[in-house]
Length: 273
Image (tube, rainbow, N blue to C red; front, side, top):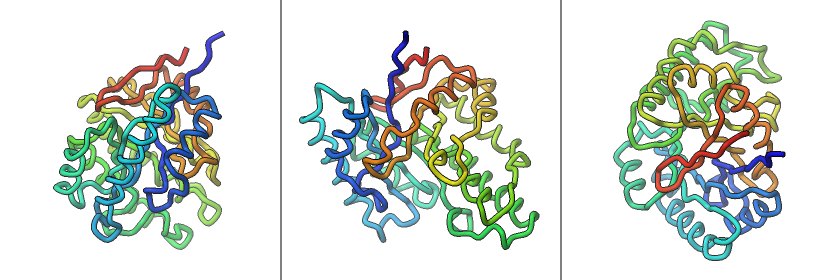
């Protein structure tokens, strides 16, 4: 019987604003849970780069990864990574910090609308259907522009708005009216040889599902996409490695035979079956 190999491609340590545990503690839990490795992808939000001292946070994260490698080198792959949020807000600083360190993997994500409002802080139940439609269209247009930035490896959380629009405070609202823009995003990723992330964190929340839905993974594959990562989006030892098997199964359901992790900004394939 094939033993599924699990690598968590999206984990935050206490060097991220919402992270709670050290890299060493995350390593101990990863070994306990039978992972063969994980990527430390601490935050670097370009819209708050100086305010939140992300340059210092990133340097500390990298130092902690190197220190942990010296302890766990025989039992665990620990990738040195970064999640760049809102890169278009300060491309210069994003590019400089990426160039300053030999990262294994760089994620790109967008967690705010173009007007600066955070997706997670809006009460969508107070908005009309037309207002939500316009917000989502503006989000995906920004994400399309972000996908054209060259200095990342993996687009994280393609369908992040679903976590917040579809909640107890608002009725179900489909993002399918944005599918034309999403298709352009996925086509760009495929053409540039970049990866799409499967993120399991929403399975542990009110939405109770893995994102993106399988239809977008299939769309990515049909457009020529080759590389897919899977990550828990963990901010603590309690969540590292969570639901990776379900995420890997979803990747297989979409028609991929492998997922990947990154070393030296290059994908390493891991067979699903």
